[in-house]
Length: 258
Ligand code: NAD
Image 1 (spheres, rainbow, N blue to C red):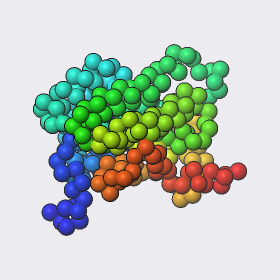
Image 2 (cartoon, rainbow, N blue to C red):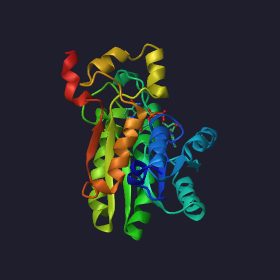
Image 3 (tube, rainbow, N blue to C red):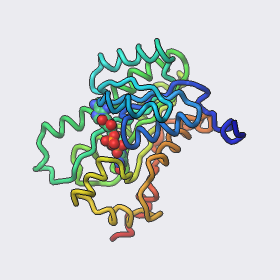
Image 4 (cartoon, rainbow, N blue to C red):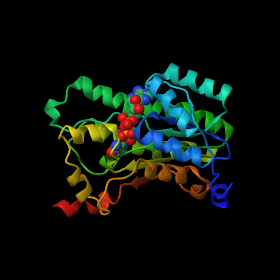
């Protein structure tokens, strides 16, 4: 093993579970964590895609729906029994919303987005965090969004992201003395399948997304992984309750297009 790899063996074989890990950001995060010595486990509501995605990055697949408490509990029991205790959770599963006016958003769609993005994140955090607190150690990273800070015509999505970022701080205060750190990482725009589909349908203009970023580009999925890996590592031992933007300077540069 190269010296650099040894230095990067942050995971030391411990289990890191990534929800929504079969696609996009979650898959890239799992790949980065596996590369840094974590025993990555990917979960997703799409069981077939999770199983297919796990092999090439050296991860295991334990699929479940994050909204379903009993399924989440059963998945944690399976992981603990077969692989090992979950020492890191990346609560990443989420639904992205196409933009639009609030009056055009059906309440059923609002409920569906909030169920996954807010309730689902809470169920994952509760299931992982209580176990971690009992063991006296663990790390959780929630995937937020830059829309937690800046308004967007995403009237279920953006408030759900603001809520989970605040949830990270609340849970950090709750479990800090039990050795559990809880943080959020907020991606800027990443060309994962849902955003790419919106671009392809002409619903999002990629030039507007890149022009507003200080670095003049989108964020690569693996770059979110590096932010997550840092927050889970011992380098971040004194960091809890924060929301780290990994956004190619989108928050800093959004006046560039005005
Ligand atoms: P994606 O659709 O590629 O990945 C999301 C994954 O979550 C999918 O594989 C999906 O099957 C899974 N999922 C959906 N509902 C689930 C459920 N109930 N239980 C378990 N898994 C479920 O999208 P992505 O862009 O990679 O998004 C990942 C996260 O990043 C989301 O929380 C999203 O809000 C956030 N995010 C994305 C961007 C971006 O620009 N792509 C920006 C900010 C935040």
